[in-house]
Length: 468
Ligand code: HEM
Image 1 (tube, rainbow, N blue to C red):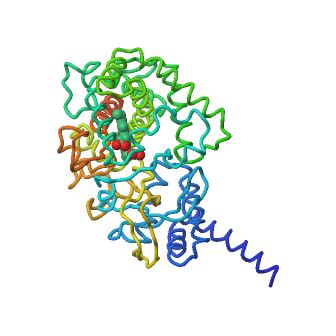
Image 2: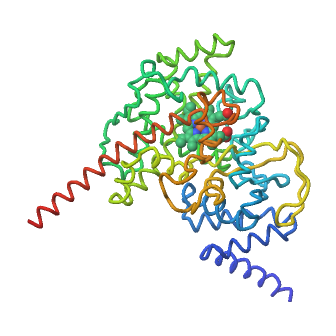
Image 3: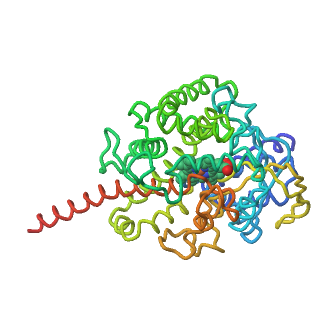
C-alpha cells in the first residue's frame, strides 16, 4: 500500500496533468473543484493546475490565448459571470506569498474596482514583481513611486496625470494640430519598412515605436535604438510577469543601459525640455517627472500600443480577403473591436483591496479579505463578458456596446465622454494614453492594410490576365 500509495499518487498527478494539457475542459473541471473543496495548502498550487497547463496548451502565447482561456473560460466556469469575482493567490517575484485575494473577471466587477475613486495600489510592486525582488536597473528608483503606484485619491496622482495630459499634446483627446510635435496623425515608415511588411512582427513593432516617440516627443529614433527597444520590451516583460530574479544583474543592467540611450535622445529634445520646464513651474521635480514619462512610454506606450497593433495587423493579414474590406468599411469600429478582442494589458495589477470583504464566494468558499489584500483584475475577462458583449468570442466590428471595452483600464465609452483623461470623475483611472494609442494603432494598421490591399489588387489583376 505504501509503495502503491506514493507511486499511484504520482501516476495520478501525471495522468491529470496530461489530461489537463491535452484536453483543457478537464483542467477547467479539475481546477473548479480544487477552488471549491481543496484546503488552502493545496489551493496555493492552483497556478500549477491552471496557468502552467494553459501555457503549455497555448504554446506560450500569453497575449491571445493564455489570458483568454484563463479569465474568459476557467474563472467564469468556476464562479459564474454574475458573481464576477474568484480567488487568486498572491504571487510575487514568481513566489507564492501569503494568503488569497480577489481575482476580478466580469465587466461589472472590473468597472466597479477600476473606476473606484479610492482604488488602491501597492507602492512596492511592479506588476507581478516586488521591487525588493528585482535587481537594480529594472525600475529607475528616482521615479518610484510612479503614477501607477499611487491610490486614485492621492492628490499627487491627479497632479501627475494632469501634467502628462497638458504637456504631451498628442495624448489629448482632440489635440490642436498646430501644437503637436510632428504633423498630426502622420505615420512615417521607419528605415527598412514598407507597407508590404504586415506579416513581420518585428517591423510592425518598429513602425509603432518609431511613430510613438515622434508623436509623443518629436524625436526620430534610429534603427539601432528601435532594435534596442524591442530587446527592452522583451526583457521587461519577464520582470512584469514576475520571472526576473534578483540575481539577474545583467538583465537589470541591460534595461538601464537601453533606458539611458533613449533618455539621451528625449531629455535634450525640445519636447523633453518643455516637459521639464512645465513640471518645474508646477513645483515638481521636472527631470524626474520626464524620466517617469519616458519609463512609462517605453513600457505601457511601446509595449501596449505595440501589442495591440501587432495583434490587430496579424488578424488582418491572416485573412486579408475578408478583413481588409471590413477594416476600410469602418476603421474606427474595427479598431474598437480589436481593442476589445486583443487587450495587451491585463489590468491595474496588482491592486490593493480598499473595501474589506468577509464571507462566502459564489462557489461557497469562505474568504476574509481585509483592507490591503492583494487583488487582480482582468481586461480579458471583462471584454468577453456576455452580459455586455453578445457572442463575445465573435469578432464583430460595430457590435452593440462595442465601445464598452475595459482595455484601457476604465470603460472606453466613459473615458471618451470626457474632454480630458486627467479630469474625468466617472472614469478617474483611464489610461492617459488611451486616445493616442488608438489613433496610432489605427494609423499603423491603415499603413499595413494598404499594403495588403495592394497585394490583393495585384493578385486579382494577375488572375484576370491568366483568364484572358
Ligand atoms: C494600446 C496601448 C495601451 C494600453 C492597452 C494601455 C492600458 C493601460 C492600462 C490597463 C493601465 C492600468 C495599468 C496599471 O495601472 O497598472 C494603464 C495605465 C497607464 N498608461 Fe496605458 N495603455 C496603453 C498605452 C499607453 C500610452 C501610449 C501611454 C502614454 C502616455 C500610456 C500611459 C499610461 C499611464 C501613465 C498609466 C498609469 C495611469 C495611472 O496609474 O493612473 N499608456 N494603461
